[in-house]
Image (cartoon, rainbow, N blue to C red; front, side):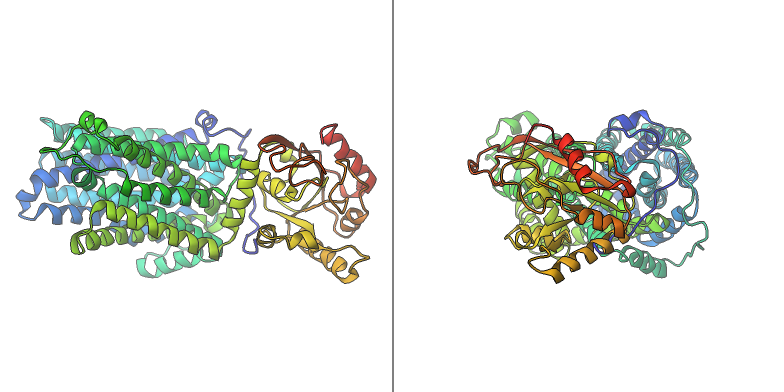
Length: 638
C-alpha cells in the first residue's frame, strides 16, 4: 500500500523463530506473558469483587443507589485511560520498556496492599480511590504491552505472540471475574480477596524481573503532561498512516462489541434465558473459550504472517452468529430462574452456547491480525504513542457502548436480544465502511479465500524472500490465480507484473488494482505501455518493495515451462536487486489453467506447492539460468 512506511528491524538477537506455544519456552516472551496474565487476572478479581460488594452491601453504607455507585466505579476505572494514555505512550517510547514494566508492577503491589487494608476495614471510598489508581496502573501498562512485542519477537512470531496475549487476557478476565465473584460472597471473603490481590501483584512483579531489556526507541522526546493536548497529539500520531488509523478504529469497534455483549450477559441470562448466575458464568466461559480458540487459530490460518484477510472473515462471523443469537432461544414458562442443568435441558440452549463460542472465535480472528497490523505498520520510534491513541479510542467506544445500552434498553425499552441484533447489524455497516475505505482488507480476504478454500497450499523456502528491502521474484506461469496464491503465501506485500488483458478481468481487477499490480503489454503490441511498466517496476524496487514477474510472458498451454524472456535481465541491469526463483507445482489441470481437459472440480482442494530457491546475486542473473533454477524447483509435478 502507498501508506506503508519502511520500518527498520528492532535491535536484539531474537533467536530461532518459534510457534505461538513455543514462545512460552523463551525468555523473550514467557515472562512478559505471565506478567500480563497476572495483571489482567488481578484487575478483574479486584474490580468484580468491588462491584458485587457495592451491589449487595456497600451502597447502603454511603447512602447512594447501587446502580449509581456501580456506574461511578466503572467510570473511575476507565477515566485514567482518557487522562493518562497519551502521557503513558510518551513514557513508553522514551524509556526502556522492561524497566517500566517492573516499576508499574511495583505500583500494583502498593495499590493492592492498600486494597487489602481497605477490604479489611470495609472502606468503600478507599476502594473506589484504589480502583482509580488501578485504572491508572493499567493505563501506564497498556502502551508498553503491545509496543514491546515487536521488539522481542520476529515478524513471523508477531501474530502468534499477539494471539497468546489475547488468549491469556480473556482467560485471565474470566478466571478473575469468577474468583472475585465467588470469594467476596464467602464468610471472611473480603480478607481473602485482599490477600489474593496483594499476592498476585507480587507474582506479577516477580515474573517481570525476567523480561529482557527493551531499549528506548525515542530517548530524545520530552514528556508533556497536559492530557488534552497530548490526547490530540497521540491521535495525530495514529493518523500518520491511514490504514493504521482505520485498523485502530476497527480494534475499538471490537471493544465496543465486547463491552456490549459482556455487560448485558447478566440481564440477557435473567430476562431472555430465564436462568440464574451459573448460566451467566457458563456464557462468559463460552465467550472466553471462543476468543482463545479464535486467537490461537490465527497463526495457523495466516501462515504465521499478518493476514488481513482474516479480518473480514471475523466480521462476517461476528454478524452471522450475533444475528442468530436473536433467533436462537425461546425460554420455557418457568416460575423461577433455571440452573445450569435445567437450562441445558431446554430447547435451543446448545445453540445459544454455540453462538457465544463462535462470536468469541470470530472475534479472535478479527482482533489479532488488527493488533499485529498496527504493530508492523507503525514506526518503532512512536509505536507506543500509537498504542496509547488506540487505548484512548478504545475507552471512548466502550463508554459509547454503555451509553447506547442505557438509551436502547432503558429509554427505548428494547429487549436484550433485540439489542444484540442491533449491534450485529451495525457491525455489517461498520465493516462495509472500513473495507470500502481500506480495500486492502477485502482484497486480502479474496486472496485468502482462494488460497485456503480452492486449494491446500504448501510452501517451502519462502524465508529466502528478504524481510526488508527490494527483491524480484520470478516464477513459472500456470494459471489465472497464480498471483493470488503467491500473494497469499508471502509475508510481505508483493506487486505483480500482470499482462494488461488479465489485469482487466472481473474480480481479479479489484485484487490487482488494490494490490498495486503493474499492467504490461508486449513491446510489439504497445511500446509505450511496455516502457511504462518497466518504469513502474524500477520505481517499486527503488522504494524497497517486492515485485513478482512471470518471465514466460504468458500462461503455459501444455504445463511445461516456456522460454524466459530477457525483461528480467533488463530490470536487474537497471536496478541491481536480489532475484528469488520460485516454482508453482500442482496447478496444471485445474479450472484456472489452460489445460483443455480442465473442469471446475479438477484438482479442487488439491495440494499445491510453492517452492522458492536461494536468492541470485544481480550480477549473476541470466534469463536461461533462472529458467533452469525454476525448472529444478518445480521438478516433474506440473
